[in-house]
Length: 315
Image (cartoon, rainbow, N blue to C red; front, side, top):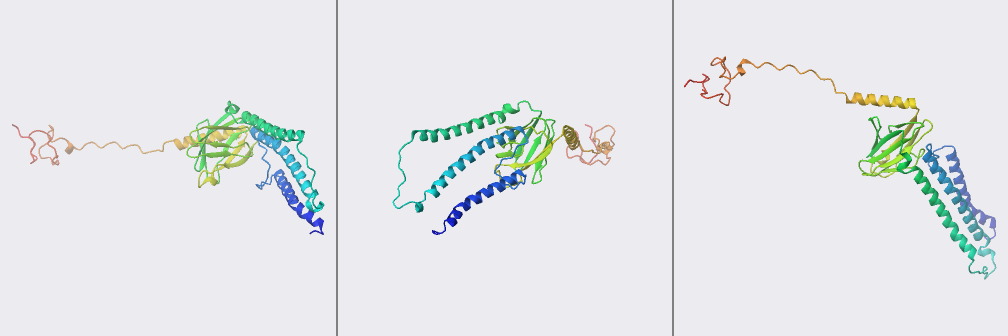
C-alpha cells in the first residue's frame, strides 16, 4: 500500500463514487416515474398545496446539497492533501488564533439559513394549511377514519365506505376546491396522498382540515400514515378526479343506490281478523243458551256463577 498511492486513492474514492452512483440512479428513477420507493425527491403535487410543498422542498434541498458538497470537499481535501505520510517528521501546521471575519461569517451564515428555512416554511403553512385556505369550498366532504377503513360523506347526504387492500375511491371533480373535514372514531390516523398534497392527521375529538384542487382527471394512491393497530397496512386510500359530467353521474348513481337501500321491503297485507266465535261470548249474555259447551272461565263471569255450567241462579 505504501508503494502504490493510486490504490490508496482508489480505496478512498470508492465510497464517494458509490454514493454518487446511487444518488444519480434514484434521481433518474424518480424522473421516469419508476416508483421504486427509493427516490429522495418529494412528488410534484397535482394540487396547488402539493406543488408548494415541492417548491419548498427544492428551495431547502438544493442549498443544503451545495453546502454539504462544499463542506465534504474541503474536509476531504484537508485529509488527503495534508495527511501525515506526506509531511516531514515532527511537522506542525501553522498556528493562528482567532479571525474575526471568519467567526462572524460561520456564525451568521447558518443563522440566516435556518431563519429563511423557517420563514418560507411558515409562509407555506399559513397559505395552505390553515382553515382560511379552504373557507369557500366547492365540495365539502366529511372523512371519518376508523380501524381499519374510511367513510366519505358527501354534501348530498350519501356515504361511500372504503375498506381493505382494494379501496373504494374518493371521487372528486376536477377544477373545484374540495375540502376534507377529517375526524376519527377511535385512534389517530393519517390521511396522505403524496401525489396530491401533504398529510393531515385524524385525531379523536378534534376536526382537522385539508383540501385538493386537481386540474386534470386521474387516480392516485395513498395510505394511513399513523401506526393505528394490527390492520394499519390495510388502510389504503384512492382518490379519483373526474370531469364535471362524470362527477354528476357519480352523484346520481350514489343517490339512487342510497334510495334503493333505504326503501322498505314489500310485505304481505295483514289478513283480516277472524270474527269471534259464539262460544267466546260471556255465558251471562242474553243470547247464550245454558250449557252451550263453552269452557268454564278460570274467573267468575258474574255473581251466582255455577261450576256445573247451568248459568246464574236467580235469587
